[in-house]
Amino acid sequence: MKNNLSIFGGEKVIPEGTIKKWPPIDKLDVDYVLSSLNGEIHSFGPNCKEFEKEFAQWNGNKYAITTNSGTAALHMGIAGCDFGCGDEVIVPAYSWSSSATCILHHNCIPVFVDIDFDTMNIDVDKIEEKITEKTKGIIVVHLHGLPVEMDKVLKIAEKYKLKVIEDACQAHGAKYKEKKVGNFGDCAAFSFNQNKCLCSGEGGMFVTDNEEIYNKAKMLWNFGETRVPFENRDYHAYALGWMYRNNDLTAAFGRAQLKKLDWYLEVQKKNAEVLTNILKEVESLILPYVPENCEHNWYNYTIRLDMDYFGIKKDKRKFRDYVLKAIQSEGVKCGIWQSFILPIMTVFQAKNAYGKGCPWSCKYYRKEINYNPEEYPNAQKHCDTHFGITDPLRAPNDEKVAELIGIAIKKVIDYVKEIGPKKFIEKCEQFLK
Ligand SMILES: Cc1ncc(COP(=O)(O)O)c(C=O)c1O
Image (cartoon, rainbow, N blue to C red; front, side, top):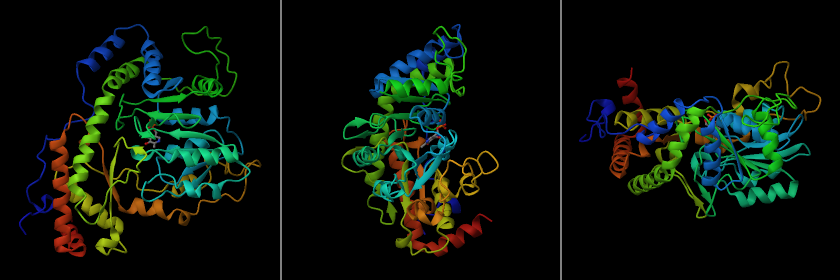
């Protein structure tokens, strides 16, 4: 065999040190952060205020609130939309856990809808069948940076008088019909954690154009108070509040990164194109699908293995995991973003978020809610077959790196096809003992 895989002792396609770390840090970041450090306010400070203004402007929103996580911004959305005890909120069966647990945070009940296998987003044609008299809203997740088909969602929302929250935690700059996400629903949440297209360490942003939602979200964000730092606070909790404020250092870092975000997104797009051009010839790989009216931001370039092509019926995960290990061994930093569908997570299966079965056991809730994993076959199929690439396709990594990633993936898949998946698994088991 001429191209022995690195996992079996062959030479790596991508030498150590080729892929640069994320995010790129330069003088601008250092200047912003140092200036914050030398300033006088280190909690919610002047950089926080400026970050809110700049992000709102960048994304085209009227209001923005800087938070200490994307999850906090999601919870603020739930409170801002006035969802509460007994209310059901629809959410995709595949996402980050907090896309659904944020609903529980406000004593509401998540109701899951399967994903569409092609887009990996909520299957908009299956939303209506999950709506009951208790349903108050829909959380859409623009998963991996691909916008959800918002026209259909908004039509359903209008028909049933539901509020829509966009989980745009992964989708900075992604566009639906040429408009940035975060501008379609009643409000939206972004995340700025380590892995996101805009990284400020940790952090997030809540955005909305609706003043009432903004004010309610702000109360939850700041101890239930109506006045924020910089205003004449009375330190009175008018409602149940949390402490979701950001701090000045993180906001300063975020501001510097925001200045480079358009460039980052351009680089990701070019690199994704290069990778697609190499891999589109490789039968057996299911590459990301982008509908015509969507602009992906390529937060995560997700590939699914076509198990039918390989003739694999059992051991799909085992096969995928070995293929992934082989690709990683070639020097590609890639992984499995989330390997569980949300409804099977213990917090939902046990229906015991707050103890004593709460909130499901409370008298205000519909008793028929159940989380049968069999209702989400597309989400499960996705979990069993995918792997994805984030940082290596981001700036400062360029098209040459993207090309190497393509070559490495192709090398592994060609090898697997040559010896056959069964033998490949056996060989992996032998080598990785
Ligand atoms: C889709 C999605 N929603 C919500 C979150 C939560 O964001 P954070 O980690 O900033 O709380 C994340 C990221 O972790 C995410 O990917």
